[in-house]
Image (cartoon, rainbow, N blue to C red; front, side, top):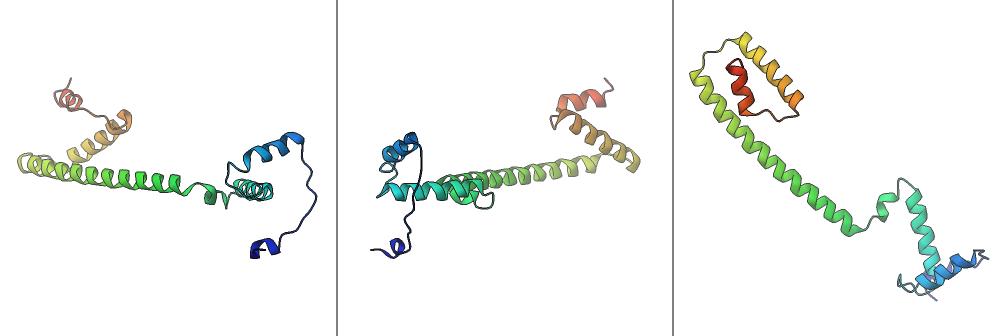
Length: 137
């Protein structure tokens, strides 16, 4: 008798015939050696399911690993894209600043307008929109 089975206790278990039939039909599909093993696994799974702290343990490792990999990959890609965008913006600002003669108050007002435009448009400000504004249209 295995070490695990030495501490097992037998007790009466009452269940509906339909439930009993489910156990009979499914225990081999779950690679269980016995119906008792299947019922015990089902009870442990359900207890974990209803326990918020333990719920994560019951997500299959493959799903958790795949999701983590996808999120990490997306995060790395987004970070690289944001970095490239920041470099391009810095280049553009340096070129413009070297040729533009803009005072501080105009710059502050423009920043406020740009923040407002981006908020209103959910980040989809187009060059055409900016050209129309600059030309007073």
